[in-house]
Image (cartoon, rainbow, N blue to C red; front, side):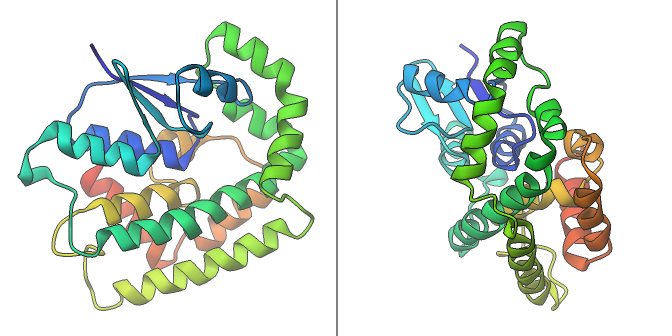
Length: 244
């Protein structure tokens, strides 16, 4: 039975899981759930939380991008393509907790007040029933998201400042000319950092982020950071390890 990867199409955490499965050549069926409705469905499938991504493999429910990488590593079982590296888990953890959180918060802060932008992207590739239910729930779902992620008038500037600091940190690490963040080959550290910055780096290999419709304030951040070495590094990781 082919595993099913449950995602929000524009989620950078879902892209992290998707990339890991693709890296290991694991066939899967990607299914998008409507925001709001996903909370009901996650519980129905026995997930411990309501966050995506979720991988359904028969009766097994694997939740979270890191856990899906662990599953893919074990499923693939070939050391030549292993994403493990010394120090990678610590880099991944910080990226999840800081980069991932503030990329999402900044995007929401710039899109949710102009919700048609976000609704258009979140409802792509949904089944007709999910689209109808998600659209009906969207006014309430939007308010819940804004409360959950503290989308206040200062949220964008706060998260932008956090991300500026993380870009500085990443560039300091890369300043010695290294290609990878942990060791001498591509690892889950690189995959995680590149995935989580992809919404603003907009690599061509990830057309969802490259072509998504966004407000001018979002594009201003894309343009502000485009030429930073950290964003060049993200696009290079995609070019070398995500193409094809």
